Length: 170
Image 1: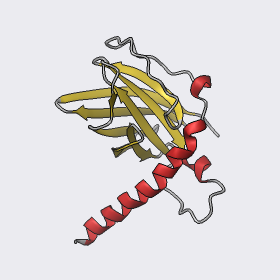
Image 2: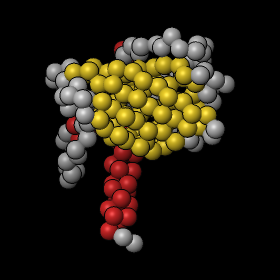
Image 3: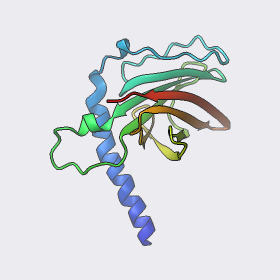
């Protein structure tokens, strides 16, 4: 096994061992106080149930009849008070939950994000299937407007979505 393969394997193992417990801890979050923006895209009447989703709902849209729901987990808040946890470079974990036009959960495909920071730099993150959605670590450390692009591949169907998310001063 090459050293690069070992590093990637260790990084993926670390991500899975840290992200899954964090996602499980957030199940009790009340999403009713958070309003999602609705896209006027291709119109779908499917209402997504967010009760089992982790994080704060930050955006919802419809792409080719598929419902996309983006939830954001603040990793610094989750890590605060946890002993022996290594410091993470990413500030947030971005989850994308996808529902088909027929109302079925889409979690067997592939997904990824491209995030343009307020300063113009780009972050790429390949998302992992987890908890009924797709999650990846992103860094949203600078206040301002971020452009988030998501791509989901579900079999032969390729779905692209774009939205803006504003990070306020803390």
